Length: 497
Image (cartoon, rainbow, N blue to C red; front, side, top):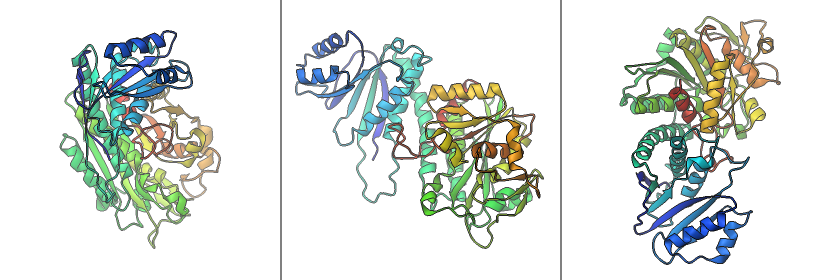
């Protein structure tokens, strides 16, 4: 269940209606007790000394206070210790967790006093971004994917009021963040959708319906068009499914453009492994193997909503990797659209194969940069866990800018080795390149495979998001559903290009 949510801005003066709550942050320090006493005195609320002692205890960081003396009827006190463990994700994560606790609490309005930017030196680059993380957290905590639950619960109304001296500034941030989060939620909806409903055709249909109305040109290349363009890599991987392969091409072209960027996303709507079939346990999350494609679609949706001055081409090859008499086989040689040949050593290394044709197509569009996103390897999750995505590029400037945006948005990247020493690990005796190297360095060799299909004159980065794109327990907003990783990261990147 999620709330019918509204977020709005008000000035510093607090006015409470019926069934209201207040969120109040306290910076942990020597004068904490006085700040707490002054706060309660300002409302003429009697303090419960046991609760006060609990809240001041170093081991505790939050307290929920229920008042029987008027509004606000509930006060959420949160203590913030700005130390080495504090991160720029603090407010996003806290607000997401708070929203999830409000189901059925009968609270209609929550007032939040925005803390002073000066309390968090080095963690936020502006007041505006601190506020943005609060709004993002509210939306992330409100996300759910329960459309297939037969028991439907009534949607409750919930309003957040953010109090800050500059009401107009905060309202502008809220409006911008609403656009960003609608795109993040669209990506999450696509990624969380079961494969039985999100076929390649349905992926294309939903993308076209959502983005065409925003002025984005959406072209869905069907099987016949792929054959015409000799995209045999995509055709081979998708050849065993009754849901034919296709490629979605999105074109966002503003009147004024700083740069032309190509975003490429892996769109495997289901991965059985093909003839190199996966065990059942490994198949359970494979409807999310199109998360990279979902990221591309979400970024372009938000760019259109925000009217970003950057031309973006989105390319999402979509397939189901299934098993029948038409399955491509270990030992096959595929002639890709670029003319380069691929020896298939493992049909479960399918994402890189479809990206070969997509990256070649991207290169032919002559963009300034190509950035691809893929849940490409389990190896990257072994290396980095679910906390960060792997970043592969030879371009230091591109790497640094992506890294900075990742740190700011807390969709973090870690740059991996990418020297040409690794190329020898995917040599083939019968083709130009093999789709699989040895066990060691698997995420790197997957990236080196992709490099074969990029115009070397174009700056390119590959992001392997196999860890953080899927649901995990690291944050309050990533626990129950796949995450939409990369949308917020790329929007910040594009904003600062």
